Every structure is written in C-alpha cells, then in structure tokens.
Image 1 (spheres, rainbow, N blue to C red):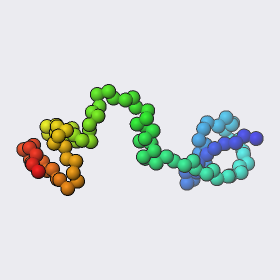
Image 2 (spheres, helix red, strand yellow):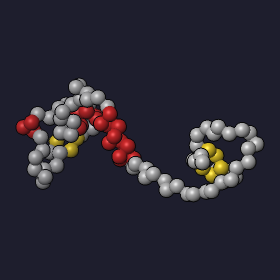
Image 3 (cartoon, rainbow, N blue to C red):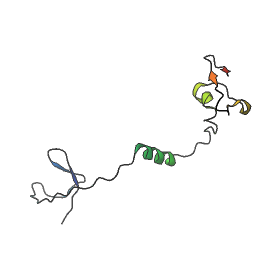
Image 4 (tube, rainbow, N blue to C red):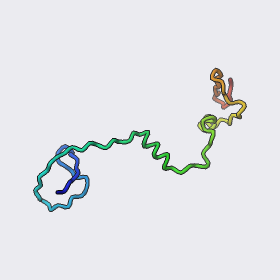
Length: 100
C-alpha cells in the first residue's frame, strides 16, 4: 500500500510530492484529514532568525540609552546627563539641543 499526501484545491486532490504511477491508473482512495502542524508565530520566526544571524561586533551597546543619537543624529548624552528620575522629562528642540 502506498500512502500519498495531498491537499484539496477546491476541485481536485493535488499531491504534495511527485507520484510514480502510470497515467490513467485507476485508484481507490481513503481520505483521512491530517491535523495541520502548528505554525510558528511571527515572533517565534523572528527569534529564530535572530539566533541564526552572526553577532555584529560594530553594533552599539548603548542603543537604548542613546536612541536619539542613533535614530535622529543628535549628540551623545554623557552618563552624567542621562535621565534617571522618572519625574524628570527631557525634550528635544527641533535644532537638536536639549532642554529640561
């Protein structure tokens, strides 16, 4: 007995792999639905992809702390000026200077 996997396209059964049968061969089919394999989520796919990528030695280690610099080209903020108090709000003026 040969087991074939196929999907139904709305009109006919389409084998998922090549079938070695003579053209016109009459067959008797027993259809058994197959439970679909659980598909990984987009987040799982991205996590797997990130693990497959080689590490970048040129990547910044302070990207979160210096996001304005990397995203908008603003000057780096020295450690002493970094906002550590949740009550303090730092805003950026359109000319690239900072004010508190």
